[in-house]
Every structure is written in structure tokens, then in C-alpha cells.
Amino acid sequence: MRFWIELSGLSEELARAELFAAAEALGGSADPSASPLAPGLVAVDLPTSVEPGTLAERLALARRVLRPIGEDGPEAWTALEARASRGQSAAFRRLGHASSGASDPAIAQGAEAFRRGGGRISLSHPDRRIWIARNPDGADVYLEEVAGVERGRYGERRISRLPFQRPIGLDPRLARAAANLARVRPGGRVVDPFVGTGALLAEAGLLGARLYGVDIDPTMIRGALQNLAHLGVHAEELTVGDAATTRCGPSGGCFDAVLTDPPYGRASATGEEGAAGLVARVLPVWAARVREGGRVVVILPGGPDPLPAPWRCVLSIPMRVHRSLTREFRVYERAGATVE
Image (cartoon, rainbow, N blue to C red):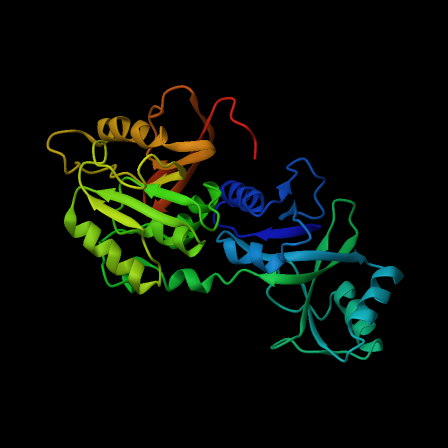
């Protein structure tokens, strides 16, 4: 079934990539070439067994999941009357506008049709939220919100709200976007060879993944475990040691994804080794343990690819992660890997 997603304004490129990967993780698909229903809306197709709310729960860089009712006219108004048949309430708004727009003809006509069906208008606590967008042909389209993205929950997971804190922590929305880029699935094995405060593992765990990780600093491992426990997330194994030589995870077992934010921008804790050299030494070790069709998602400040062939970078999106600090969200897949 096709749904239309309104993206947030944080980063359209990263938001699109997150949406497409999240839909794929749920067994759906996206068609980037699909004709836009309206500016700012992106289409995805989900299996009938997947509720739209499941997609909304995964996303961080989106606002809502919508299903079209129809273009402004008798057909749409009849559909709106039918939606009010149980005496429900509704709010009508135009996408991208904060006010209800009482002077907007499409809003007025849609509200009148809803009232004819026996419904009432409630802007504060409506049973249904109806949005209006203008398509490329200039016609107004009515869409019903079938699920909303609760963006406020990410604020509750900011580093300043956690028991173990550091001056800079990855925004939970960006950490969730990275976990979606990795196509994390319930029960999948995800490893972070640079655990830090545990922000990436937390988001992967909240998506149901089994978590593994390494960090050379025992304080970071203890702190990450504190943060994960605070969020109700369990880690299978977090280990102290050098990420290139320390074993972690099931013996002989594969991971579904490597998901990491290496310690770029500061000296690593492995002597005089630079951060870029550290990543180039560590990342191939863990990539070798990723199953066929799995992904490596790494947040880097630019520079050369740390993974040699057969790995290839299929996506690289620059994003400001903290004040003037910019990073690239990179996704790697094996060349010739089977598409899931």
C-alpha cells in the first residue's frame, strides 16, 4: 500500500535516505522516481501486513505518514463525509502552515463536507487530521494523517538527559537516522567498534537489534551501559579493548550491520595513532564479519574511504552534527551483493 511521508526540515537528503532504508527494513520499497503528489512529500510502499504507525515509530527525520483522500472536488468531499459517519471530529490544515487557515477555500469546503457527514471540527484534540497540499498541476489534494512521528521522544534521549554525559553527544535523531540507514531489524546483530556514550547502539536497540560493541576506554563502556539501562535497552556484549584485535560477538557468527561514529577530531586513545589511521585499521576487521547483504554505516569527517574493495560507498551525505562540526553519513555495501 502506498503512503506519502512529510519529511522534516533538518536535512532533506538524509531524511529521504532514512525513509527509504526504513521502508526496506520493513519489507517495503520506495520509488525515488515517483511523480510527487505535492512538494515535500515522498512516496513509499509498505506491505499490507505493516501498519503505517510502525514506519512512523522508526523515523526521526519526518513529520507524518499520510494517505490521499482525493483532489478538491465532489469525490473528495464524499469521502470526507464518509469519514464523519461515526460522529468523529477532525482538524483541517494546509501542509506547511501553522494556522488552520479559515480563509482557505479548500479548508472551508473540506470542513463543510465533514460536517455534512455528521462530524465536527476540533483543532485541539481531533479524531482525524486532514491535511491539504497543492500538487504540481495546481490542484488541492486532501490527505489523512494515519500516523505521526513523535519527535519529542528524541529530546528525552539527548546526552544532557542521560546519566552518563559528555560535552558533545550525537543528536538522537541523527543516531536513529544512522540506525535506519543500516536497515536495522528486530533480532539483527549490530556492532559498534567505537561505543562511546552508546548513542548509536541505543537507537539500534530501540529498534529491536541485538547489540555488541568495543571501546578501549573502560569508563566509556561503563557509561554506555548506564545509558542503555536508563533507556531500557539491553546489550548482549560490550567489551573493553583495542577494536582491531578484541573479539566480540558470537564465535564464528556474522553481524547484520556495523554502525559507528569513530573518534574523529580528537586524538585516539591508542597512543600516537591518528584517528584516520585508527579507523582504516579497525573498520575492515569488522566489515569482514558482516553477512552478505549487510551494511556498514559510519559517520566520518570526510577523507578517503576506510574500506577497500569489495566494499563500495553507496551513499555519502554531509550533515552538521554539532554547531560548526560537520560529518558525512556514509553507507557501504559489498560490490555485487544481493539486493534485499
